[in-house]
Amino acid sequence: MLFAQLPDDLFRPLASPSRAFNAALLLHLHRRVIGSEPMRKADLLAEIGAFAGSYDTPELADDDTFPPDAVERRSALYRRFLESGWLIERRERYVPVVEFDPEARLLLEELSRLERGETRSYGGAVLEVLGSLESALANPAERSEALANAAREANAFLAHLRGLAGAMRKIEDRILREEDRRAAFRLYFEDFVERHLISDYRTLHTRFNPFRFRSAIVREAGRGLRDVLMIRALAEGLVREGRAGTVEAGERAVRADLAEILSVFEGIDRHLDAVDEVVARMERRIAAAVRYMDRPDSLGIERTAAALRAVGAAAAAPDVPADVSLLRPPLGEAHLATPRRLRPPIDIDPLPEIVVDSRIEAFVEAKAAFRRRTTVTPERMAAFVEARLPERGALRGSDLTITDVDAFIVFQRLREMDVLFEGALGARFSVTHLSERLSNGWLDCPDFVLERRADA
Image (cartoon, rainbow, N blue to C red):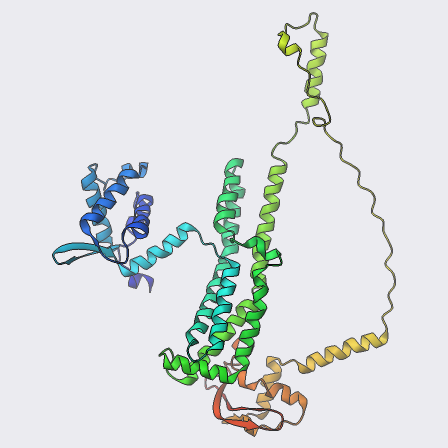
Protein backbone atom coordinates (compact mmCIF):
# COMPACT_ATOMS: atom_id res chain seq x y z
CA MET A 1 0.00 0.00 0.00
CA LEU A 2 2.93 2.37 0.61
CA PHE A 3 4.36 2.13 -2.89
CA ALA A 4 0.91 2.14 -4.45
CA GLN A 5 0.46 5.70 -3.13
CA LEU A 6 3.95 7.05 -3.84
CA PRO A 7 5.59 7.69 -7.25
CA ASP A 8 7.82 4.90 -8.55
CA ASP A 9 11.00 7.01 -8.72
CA LEU A 10 10.49 8.84 -5.43
CA PHE A 11 13.45 7.20 -3.66
CA ARG A 12 15.87 7.59 -6.58
CA PRO A 13 17.47 10.84 -5.22
CA LEU A 14 17.89 9.15 -1.82
CA ALA A 15 19.77 6.22 -3.38
CA SER A 16 22.23 8.20 -5.55
CA PRO A 17 25.89 8.90 -4.61
CA SER A 18 24.80 12.39 -3.49
CA ARG A 19 21.95 11.09 -1.30
CA ALA A 20 23.14 12.99 1.79
CA PHE A 21 23.03 16.27 -0.11
CA ASN A 22 19.65 15.47 -1.67
CA ALA A 23 18.17 14.59 1.73
CA ALA A 24 19.55 17.78 3.29
CA LEU A 25 18.14 19.86 0.42
CA LEU A 26 14.70 18.23 0.68
CA LEU A 27 14.57 18.85 4.43
CA HIS A 28 15.68 22.46 3.91
CA LEU A 29 12.94 23.05 1.33
CA HIS A 30 10.37 21.36 3.56
CA ARG A 31 11.22 23.30 6.72
CA ARG A 32 12.14 26.77 5.51
CA VAL A 33 11.22 27.34 1.87
CA ILE A 34 8.03 25.72 0.58
CA GLY A 35 5.10 26.36 2.88
CA SER A 36 1.44 25.55 2.54
CA GLU A 37 1.08 27.82 -0.50
CA PRO A 38 2.71 27.14 -3.90
CA MET A 39 6.00 28.92 -4.58
CA ARG A 40 7.19 30.65 -7.75
CA LYS A 41 9.56 28.49 -9.76
CA ALA A 42 12.14 31.28 -10.12
CA ASP A 43 12.29 31.81 -6.35
CA LEU A 44 12.64 28.08 -5.75
CA LEU A 45 15.52 27.83 -8.24
CA ALA A 46 17.26 30.68 -6.43
CA GLU A 47 16.85 28.90 -3.06
CA ILE A 48 18.21 25.64 -4.51
CA GLY A 49 21.21 27.47 -5.98
CA ALA A 50 21.97 29.23 -2.70
CA PHE A 51 21.79 26.00 -0.72
CA ALA A 52 23.96 24.11 -3.23
CA GLY A 53 26.55 26.90 -3.13
CA SER A 54 26.81 26.73 0.66
CA TYR A 55 26.91 22.92 0.84
CA ASP A 56 30.51 21.70 0.61
CA THR A 57 30.93 17.93 0.46
CA PRO A 58 33.02 15.54 -1.67
CA GLU A 59 29.88 13.57 -2.51
CA LEU A 60 28.84 16.18 -5.07
CA ALA A 61 32.12 15.75 -6.94
CA ASP A 62 31.58 11.98 -7.14
CA ASP A 63 28.13 12.38 -8.72
CA ASP A 64 28.54 12.64 -12.50
CA THR A 65 24.99 13.92 -12.96
CA PHE A 66 25.84 17.29 -11.39
CA PRO A 67 27.15 19.82 -13.92
CA PRO A 68 29.96 22.11 -12.72
CA ASP A 69 28.12 25.33 -13.59
CA ALA A 70 26.04 26.71 -10.69
CA VAL A 71 23.03 27.72 -12.86
CA GLU A 72 22.95 24.39 -14.65
CA ARG A 73 23.38 22.55 -11.32
CA ARG A 74 20.32 24.13 -9.71
CA SER A 75 18.27 23.35 -12.83
CA ALA A 76 19.49 19.74 -12.75
CA LEU A 77 18.52 19.44 -9.08
CA TYR A 78 15.11 20.91 -9.77
CA ARG A 79 14.50 18.49 -12.67
CA ARG A 80 15.65 15.56 -10.51
CA PHE A 81 13.10 16.30 -7.78
CA LEU A 82 10.41 17.06 -10.36
CA GLU A 83 10.92 13.84 -12.34
CA SER A 84 11.19 11.65 -9.23
CA GLY A 85 7.85 12.92 -7.89
CA TRP A 86 8.88 15.07 -4.94
CA LEU A 87 7.71 18.31 -6.57
CA ILE A 88 4.68 19.24 -8.67
CA GLU A 89 4.81 22.11 -11.17
CA ARG A 90 1.73 23.92 -12.48
CA ARG A 91 0.76 27.38 -13.70
CA GLU A 92 -1.23 30.11 -12.03
CA ARG A 93 -2.08 32.95 -14.42
CA TYR A 94 0.79 31.98 -16.75
CA VAL A 95 3.26 31.98 -13.85
CA PRO A 96 4.89 28.59 -13.09
CA VAL A 97 4.56 27.65 -9.43
CA VAL A 98 5.87 24.62 -7.54
CA GLU A 99 4.73 22.72 -4.47
CA PHE A 100 5.42 19.39 -2.78
CA ASP A 101 3.48 16.29 -3.77
CA PRO A 102 0.93 15.65 -0.93
CA GLU A 103 2.00 12.05 -0.28
CA ALA A 104 5.67 12.96 -0.60
CA ARG A 105 5.19 15.76 1.95
CA LEU A 106 3.79 13.26 4.47
CA LEU A 107 6.78 10.98 3.91
CA LEU A 108 9.16 13.92 4.22
CA GLU A 109 7.59 14.91 7.53
CA GLU A 110 8.27 11.41 8.89
CA LEU A 111 11.84 11.55 7.60
CA SER A 112 12.25 14.94 9.24
CA ARG A 113 11.00 13.55 12.56
CA LEU A 114 13.43 10.63 12.22
CA GLU A 115 16.31 13.01 11.50
CA ARG A 116 15.49 15.22 14.50
CA GLY A 117 15.22 12.30 16.88
CA GLU A 118 12.05 11.56 18.78
CA THR A 119 11.77 12.93 22.31
CA ARG A 120 8.57 12.71 24.25
CA SER A 121 7.53 14.10 27.59
CA TYR A 122 6.02 11.60 29.98
CA GLY A 123 4.06 14.26 31.80
CA GLY A 124 2.82 15.90 28.60
CA ALA A 125 1.53 12.62 27.16
CA VAL A 126 -0.21 11.60 30.37
CA LEU A 127 -1.86 15.01 30.78
CA GLU A 128 -3.02 15.00 27.15
CA VAL A 129 -4.77 11.65 27.63
CA LEU A 130 -6.26 12.69 30.97
CA GLY A 131 -7.52 16.03 29.64
CA SER A 132 -9.15 14.50 26.56
CA LEU A 133 -10.72 11.70 28.60
CA GLU A 134 -12.15 14.04 31.23
CA SER A 135 -13.47 16.36 28.51
CA ALA A 136 -15.27 13.51 26.75
CA LEU A 137 -16.83 12.12 29.93
CA ALA A 138 -17.85 15.55 31.22
CA ASN A 139 -19.64 16.52 27.99
CA PRO A 140 -20.34 13.32 26.02
CA ALA A 141 -22.92 14.87 23.72
CA GLU A 142 -20.50 17.43 22.22
CA ARG A 143 -16.99 16.15 23.04
CA SER A 144 -17.17 12.53 21.82
CA GLU A 145 -14.22 13.15 19.50
CA ALA A 146 -12.04 13.80 22.56
CA LEU A 147 -12.33 10.12 23.54
CA ALA A 148 -10.90 9.02 20.19
CA ASN A 149 -8.13 11.59 20.62
CA ALA A 150 -7.30 10.20 24.08
CA ALA A 151 -7.10 6.64 22.70
CA ARG A 152 -4.93 7.83 19.82
CA GLU A 153 -2.58 9.69 22.17
CA ALA A 154 -2.35 6.63 24.42
CA ASN A 155 -1.45 4.40 21.46
CA ALA A 156 1.12 6.89 20.17
CA PHE A 157 2.72 7.13 23.60
CA LEU A 158 2.82 3.34 23.92
CA ALA A 159 4.43 3.04 20.48
CA HIS A 160 7.02 5.61 21.54
CA LEU A 161 7.83 3.64 24.69
CA ARG A 162 8.15 0.41 22.70
CA GLY A 163 10.66 1.96 20.35
CA LEU A 164 12.53 3.94 22.98
CA ALA A 165 14.23 0.98 24.64
CA GLY A 166 15.23 -0.39 21.23
CA ALA A 167 16.72 2.95 20.19
CA MET A 168 18.65 3.12 23.46
CA ARG A 169 20.01 -0.40 22.99
CA LYS A 170 21.08 0.53 19.46
CA ILE A 171 23.06 3.51 20.77
CA GLU A 172 24.49 1.30 23.51
CA ASP A 173 25.86 -1.16 20.92
CA ARG A 174 27.43 1.72 18.99
CA ILE A 175 29.11 3.01 22.16
CA LEU A 176 30.47 -0.44 23.04
CA ARG A 177 31.90 -0.92 19.53
CA GLU A 178 33.59 2.50 19.58
CA GLU A 179 37.34 2.21 20.19
CA ASP A 180 37.96 5.94 20.67
CA ARG A 181 37.01 6.84 24.22
CA ARG A 182 36.34 10.47 23.36
CA ALA A 183 33.96 9.45 20.56
CA ALA A 184 32.23 7.01 22.93
CA PHE A 185 31.56 9.80 25.44
CA ARG A 186 30.29 12.03 22.63
CA LEU A 187 27.87 9.28 21.52
CA TYR A 188 26.65 8.86 25.08
CA PHE A 189 25.95 12.50 25.84
CA GLU A 190 24.81 13.69 22.40
CA ASP A 191 22.94 10.69 20.98
CA PHE A 192 21.87 8.79 24.09
CA VAL A 193 21.12 11.56 26.59
CA GLU A 194 20.09 14.52 24.42
CA ARG A 195 18.45 12.79 21.46
CA HIS A 196 16.79 9.60 22.71
CA LEU A 197 16.41 10.01 26.46
CA ILE A 198 13.03 11.36 27.50
CA SER A 199 13.13 15.03 28.38
CA ASP A 200 11.65 14.72 31.88
CA TYR A 201 13.03 11.27 32.70
CA ARG A 202 14.50 12.44 36.00
CA THR A 203 11.11 13.55 37.29
CA LEU A 204 9.86 9.95 37.26
CA HIS A 205 11.53 9.37 40.62
CA THR A 206 10.34 12.54 42.36
CA ARG A 207 7.16 13.49 44.13
CA PHE A 208 6.17 15.43 41.01
CA ASN A 209 6.08 12.19 39.06
CA PRO A 210 3.84 12.72 36.00
CA PHE A 211 2.50 9.19 36.43
CA ARG A 212 0.62 10.30 39.51
CA PHE A 213 -2.17 11.04 37.02
CA ARG A 214 -2.19 7.46 35.75
CA SER A 215 -4.55 6.30 38.49
CA ALA A 216 -6.96 9.08 37.53
CA ILE A 217 -6.90 7.90 33.91
CA VAL A 218 -7.57 4.30 34.91
CA ARG A 219 -10.36 5.40 37.25
CA GLU A 220 -12.05 7.61 34.66
CA ALA A 221 -11.81 4.97 31.91
CA GLY A 222 -13.22 2.29 34.23
CA ARG A 223 -16.05 4.59 35.26
CA GLY A 224 -16.88 5.23 31.63
CA LEU A 225 -16.97 1.50 30.84
CA ARG A 226 -19.38 0.85 33.71
CA ASP A 227 -21.72 3.72 32.84
CA VAL A 228 -24.11 2.50 30.14
CA LEU A 229 -25.81 5.87 29.76
CA MET A 230 -22.44 7.55 29.26
CA ILE A 231 -21.53 5.05 26.56
CA ARG A 232 -24.87 5.59 24.86
CA ALA A 233 -24.43 9.40 24.92
CA LEU A 234 -20.92 9.12 23.45
CA ALA A 235 -22.18 6.71 20.77
CA GLU A 236 -25.01 9.06 19.82
CA GLY A 237 -22.45 11.85 19.51
CA LEU A 238 -20.41 9.68 17.13
CA VAL A 239 -23.50 8.99 15.02
CA ARG A 240 -24.50 12.63 15.00
CA GLU A 241 -21.03 13.73 13.88
CA GLY A 242 -20.88 11.07 11.16
CA ARG A 243 -18.11 8.90 12.64
CA ALA A 244 -20.36 5.86 13.25
CA GLY A 245 -23.18 4.43 11.17
CA THR A 246 -25.40 3.17 13.99
CA VAL A 247 -25.62 3.60 17.73
CA GLU A 248 -24.52 -0.02 18.24
CA ALA A 249 -21.40 0.54 16.15
CA GLY A 250 -20.73 3.74 18.08
CA GLU A 251 -21.03 1.91 21.40
CA ARG A 252 -18.56 -0.71 20.23
CA ALA A 253 -16.13 2.03 19.20
CA VAL A 254 -16.53 3.81 22.53
CA ARG A 255 -15.96 0.61 24.52
CA ALA A 256 -12.95 -0.24 22.37
CA ASP A 257 -11.39 3.20 22.99
CA LEU A 258 -11.96 3.02 26.73
CA ALA A 259 -10.61 -0.53 26.91
CA GLU A 260 -7.57 0.54 24.87
CA ILE A 261 -6.79 3.39 27.28
CA LEU A 262 -7.16 1.04 30.24
CA SER A 263 -4.86 -1.61 28.75
CA VAL A 264 -2.17 0.95 27.88
CA PHE A 265 -1.93 2.59 31.30
CA GLU A 266 -2.40 -0.62 33.28
CA GLY A 267 0.39 -2.43 31.42
CA ILE A 268 2.86 0.41 30.99
CA ASP A 269 5.15 -0.70 33.83
CA ARG A 270 6.96 -3.38 31.83
CA HIS A 271 7.92 -0.84 29.17
CA LEU A 272 9.21 1.57 31.82
CA ASP A 273 11.21 -1.25 33.40
CA ALA A 274 12.89 -1.93 30.05
CA VAL A 275 13.82 1.75 29.69
CA ASP A 276 15.12 1.92 33.28
CA GLU A 277 17.22 -1.19 32.72
CA VAL A 278 18.97 0.27 29.67
CA VAL A 279 19.55 3.64 31.40
CA ALA A 280 20.98 2.02 34.53
CA ARG A 281 23.26 -0.25 32.49
CA MET A 282 24.59 2.65 30.43
CA GLU A 283 25.21 4.80 33.52
CA ARG A 284 27.17 1.96 35.17
CA ARG A 285 29.33 1.48 32.08
CA ILE A 286 30.05 5.18 31.65
CA ALA A 287 30.91 5.49 35.36
CA ALA A 288 33.27 2.52 35.09
CA ALA A 289 34.93 4.04 32.01
CA VAL A 290 35.49 7.33 33.83
CA ARG A 291 36.81 5.54 36.92
CA TYR A 292 39.44 3.59 34.98
CA MET A 293 40.25 6.30 32.42
CA ASP A 294 43.48 7.36 34.21
CA ARG A 295 44.67 4.04 35.56
CA PRO A 296 47.77 4.44 37.82
CA ASP A 297 51.06 3.02 36.61
CA SER A 298 51.91 0.14 38.96
CA LEU A 299 55.55 0.06 37.79
CA GLY A 300 56.17 3.79 38.13
CA ILE A 301 57.58 3.52 41.66
CA GLU A 302 60.01 0.77 40.68
CA ARG A 303 61.24 2.72 37.67
CA THR A 304 61.70 5.90 39.75
CA ALA A 305 63.63 4.02 42.44
CA ALA A 306 65.84 2.40 39.80
CA ALA A 307 66.54 5.81 38.26
CA LEU A 308 67.51 7.28 41.67
CA ARG A 309 69.80 4.34 42.40
CA ALA A 310 71.48 4.79 39.03
CA VAL A 311 72.01 8.48 39.70
CA GLY A 312 73.42 7.79 43.16
CA ALA A 313 75.77 5.13 41.84
CA ALA A 314 77.18 7.44 39.20
CA ALA A 315 80.79 8.51 39.76
CA ALA A 316 80.09 12.18 39.32
CA ALA A 317 76.97 14.18 39.98
CA PRO A 318 74.99 14.80 36.80
CA ASP A 319 75.13 18.25 35.27
CA VAL A 320 71.71 19.60 36.22
CA PRO A 321 70.64 23.23 35.73
CA ALA A 322 70.37 25.21 38.94
CA ASP A 323 66.72 26.03 38.59
CA VAL A 324 65.86 22.36 38.08
CA SER A 325 67.96 21.24 41.10
CA LEU A 326 65.91 23.48 43.37
CA LEU A 327 62.70 21.65 42.52
CA ARG A 328 61.35 19.24 45.08
CA PRO A 329 59.46 16.08 44.19
CA PRO A 330 55.67 16.35 44.65
CA LEU A 331 55.47 14.04 47.65
CA GLY A 332 52.58 14.22 50.05
CA GLU A 333 49.26 12.76 51.00
CA ALA A 334 47.61 14.00 47.82
CA HIS A 335 50.13 12.10 45.66
CA LEU A 336 50.69 8.88 47.54
CA ALA A 337 48.45 5.89 46.95
CA THR A 338 46.09 5.19 49.80
CA PRO A 339 45.81 1.51 50.70
CA ARG A 340 42.36 0.02 50.55
CA ARG A 341 40.68 -0.24 53.93
CA LEU A 342 39.78 -3.65 55.18
CA ARG A 343 36.09 -4.19 55.41
CA PRO A 344 34.84 -5.21 58.83
CA PRO A 345 33.43 -8.71 59.03
CA ILE A 346 29.68 -9.06 58.70
CA ASP A 347 27.99 -10.14 61.88
CA ILE A 348 25.64 -13.02 61.31
CA ASP A 349 22.58 -13.11 63.52
CA PRO A 350 20.48 -16.25 63.57
CA LEU A 351 16.96 -15.78 62.37
CA PRO A 352 14.40 -16.05 65.13
CA GLU A 353 11.83 -18.77 64.95
CA ILE A 354 8.42 -17.29 64.25
CA VAL A 355 5.36 -19.24 65.21
CA VAL A 356 2.31 -18.19 63.21
CA ASP A 357 -0.95 -18.26 65.07
CA SER A 358 -3.44 -20.71 63.58
CA ARG A 359 -6.14 -18.04 63.83
CA ILE A 360 -4.08 -15.70 61.61
CA GLU A 361 -3.63 -18.49 59.04
CA ALA A 362 -7.35 -19.15 59.09
CA PHE A 363 -8.04 -15.43 58.60
CA VAL A 364 -5.63 -15.25 55.64
CA GLU A 365 -7.23 -18.33 54.06
CA ALA A 366 -10.69 -16.84 54.58
CA LYS A 367 -9.60 -13.61 52.87
CA ALA A 368 -8.17 -15.57 49.93
CA ALA A 369 -11.40 -17.58 49.62
CA PHE A 370 -13.46 -14.40 49.72
CA ARG A 371 -11.26 -12.85 47.04
CA ARG A 372 -11.64 -15.90 44.83
CA ARG A 373 -15.39 -15.88 45.36
CA THR A 374 -15.85 -12.20 44.50
CA THR A 375 -13.45 -12.07 41.53
CA VAL A 376 -14.99 -12.44 38.09
CA THR A 377 -12.79 -14.41 35.68
CA PRO A 378 -13.33 -15.25 31.99
CA GLU A 379 -13.82 -18.91 32.82
CA ARG A 380 -16.36 -18.19 35.54
CA MET A 381 -18.34 -15.81 33.31
CA ALA A 382 -18.28 -18.22 30.35
CA ALA A 383 -19.48 -21.09 32.53
CA PHE A 384 -22.31 -18.93 33.90
CA VAL A 385 -23.50 -18.02 30.40
CA GLU A 386 -23.09 -21.50 28.92
CA ALA A 387 -25.20 -22.99 31.70
CA ARG A 388 -28.12 -20.68 30.88
CA LEU A 389 -27.81 -19.81 27.18
CA PRO A 390 -29.68 -22.22 24.84
CA GLU A 391 -27.79 -23.91 22.02
CA ARG A 392 -29.63 -21.88 19.38
CA GLY A 393 -31.20 -18.64 20.40
CA ALA A 394 -30.63 -15.70 22.68
CA LEU A 395 -30.77 -15.02 26.40
CA ARG A 396 -32.34 -11.85 27.74
CA GLY A 397 -31.05 -10.33 30.94
CA SER A 398 -34.54 -9.89 32.40
CA ASP A 399 -35.13 -13.67 31.98
CA LEU A 400 -32.21 -14.61 34.22
CA THR A 401 -33.04 -15.65 37.76
CA ILE A 402 -30.55 -14.62 40.41
CA THR A 403 -30.63 -16.96 43.40
CA ASP A 404 -27.54 -16.06 45.42
CA VAL A 405 -24.74 -13.54 45.76
CA ASP A 406 -22.31 -15.59 43.65
CA ALA A 407 -24.64 -15.44 40.66
CA PHE A 408 -25.24 -11.72 41.21
CA ILE A 409 -21.50 -10.97 41.13
CA VAL A 410 -21.26 -12.47 37.64
CA PHE A 411 -24.63 -11.10 36.49
CA GLN A 412 -23.70 -7.45 37.14
CA ARG A 413 -20.76 -7.72 34.70
CA LEU A 414 -22.61 -9.49 31.86
CA ARG A 415 -23.42 -6.22 30.08
CA GLU A 416 -19.69 -5.64 29.52
CA MET A 417 -18.57 -9.18 28.73
CA ASP A 418 -17.78 -8.38 25.08
CA VAL A 419 -15.06 -5.85 26.10
CA LEU A 420 -13.89 -7.32 29.41
CA PHE A 421 -10.62 -9.24 29.68
CA GLU A 422 -9.26 -7.49 26.56
CA GLY A 423 -12.19 -8.78 24.50
CA ALA A 424 -11.48 -12.46 25.16
CA LEU A 425 -15.19 -13.35 25.40
CA GLY A 426 -16.23 -10.95 22.66
CA ALA A 427 -15.22 -13.52 20.03
CA ARG A 428 -17.72 -16.05 21.45
CA PHE A 429 -20.63 -13.94 22.64
CA SER A 430 -22.27 -10.69 21.54
CA VAL A 431 -24.12 -8.25 23.80
CA THR A 432 -27.00 -6.12 22.52
CA HIS A 433 -28.15 -3.31 24.81
CA LEU A 434 -31.89 -2.56 24.89
CA SER A 435 -33.78 0.59 25.78
CA GLU A 436 -36.01 -1.27 28.27
CA ARG A 437 -34.94 -1.74 31.87
CA LEU A 438 -34.80 -4.84 34.04
CA SER A 439 -35.38 -5.07 37.76
CA ASN A 440 -34.92 -8.41 39.51
CA GLY A 441 -34.63 -7.35 43.13
CA TRP A 442 -30.84 -7.38 42.93
CA LEU A 443 -30.16 -4.79 40.24
CA ASP A 444 -32.04 -2.12 38.31
CA CYS A 445 -30.31 -1.43 34.98
CA PRO A 446 -30.91 -1.32 31.18
CA ASP A 447 -31.90 -4.66 29.72
CA PHE A 448 -29.61 -6.60 27.34
CA VAL A 449 -29.54 -9.71 25.14
CA LEU A 450 -26.74 -12.32 24.98
CA GLU A 451 -26.15 -14.39 21.83
CA ARG A 452 -23.51 -16.74 20.49
CA ARG A 453 -21.59 -15.46 17.54
CA ALA A 454 -22.07 -17.39 14.32
CA ASP A 455 -18.34 -17.77 13.64
CA ALA A 456 -17.76 -19.02 17.20
